[in-house]
Structure formats: structure tokens, C-alpha cells
Image (cartoon, rainbow, N blue to C red; front, top):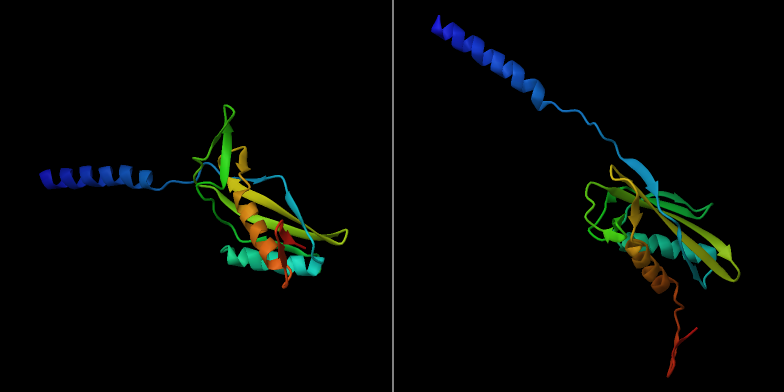
Length: 162
């Protein structure tokens, strides 16, 4: 009889604990698009598009969508870094956001004799009002500038001449 009571008590305890171990998500992240960051380059749109694609790959991004007709690119989602996104709290930037992911969407278009390259940082997080610090976008633009620089440059006493 003691053994039966113990088995019954143990099965009751297991019956109460096991359902508690199964949890279901209660919060879901929302997509939050940052303002487009734009820079202009003295290169034809096709060349700026190629350079932007190379810059993204160089920076470690994987390309999800590559539309050469519309000159647009999109990366896969990846975890945000410690300095890539922030929340404005009482007028100060709080970079302590965790559990967020982001992707970059790029659009290249003709602008005068050169190209306009726009990068939109799209974040997905349960934290609202998440903003891009523009650090990732700026790093991509630095490489685009490297990859669109003319092969033969002129260096003078006042710097690089185009």
C-alpha cells in the first residue's frame, strides 16, 4: 500500500511538472525599418551595384536576393551586434538590446554622372523603437568607396585627386 501511494504521488508530481516545462512564445518580434542611409559615388550604377555587392560579402553578409535588373540587394537576417542598434531612453542611446536581428536592403540608382546607393537597415525585435546606429551601413559604404575608386589615382600635396 505504501508503494502504491508513493507511485501515485510521484506520477501526480510528474504530471504537474511536465506541462510546466513546455512553454509557448508569448511575444513576437516586429519589423522595424530604419531611415535609408544614402551616399553618392562617382561610378556608373552597374559598377556601384557590383561594388556594393562585393562590399557586403567582404563584410560577412550573405546575399539573399540579388536583382541586377532593379539594382537591389537584400541580405539574410543576422543577429545584431553590440553597437549596431539602440533604443533612445531618456534622451540617451541604450545599446543593451538583445534578441534582435537585422538585414540590409540596398537600392542603387543613377544620380547625375554617378550613382546613389541607399541602404535600409531592417530590424526584427520584441523591443520597440529600435534604431540603427548606422555603423554597419557606414562600414559597407567605406568598402564601396574602396571598390569604386579608379585604378589609377593621382596623389598630390593636397591629397587624393579624382
